[in-house]
Image (cartoon, rainbow, N blue to C red):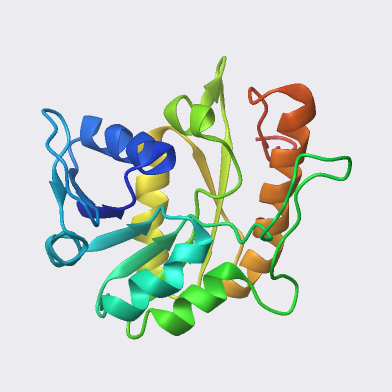
Length: 205
């Protein structure tokens, strides 16, 4: 698949490197494209034009700016963001969400990403797990949600290509529950370290 990753930080490059290793064509969209021997950087507009899949791997507070300036119409958009509340600090009680339960970051992305199919994924774990999604012989669970079945099937394939066990949790509004899971993971990682992950187990499987 042709994948445009908006954001060249740890999350974006972890996903991009994994997909490139599986033969997908990956480019990165950046406000300030840089030169790299092993990654292709373009402007955001050029990257979007080059991809059938657009991956939002920018901070949530940058999403509105990016999507208001660049059309993703006709694309499948994978929303990896988490709406961490401004001013969240490493204190007892940990991080919190800026939105939740009556809406979600993914639903807000869908409102901004007009005529695109938005799928929530890659938000419930850390970068280390994205680069190595197996603990021994166990594949970690990656939950995803969306309203378009064709778009979800492509995202399911991409999740599997990275080595995760894909689990479809339903329509996009289920992101209201996936995003709090991300906060739970972050707060647990602050206490236990980042070598932790969620795994859904099914008896008899």
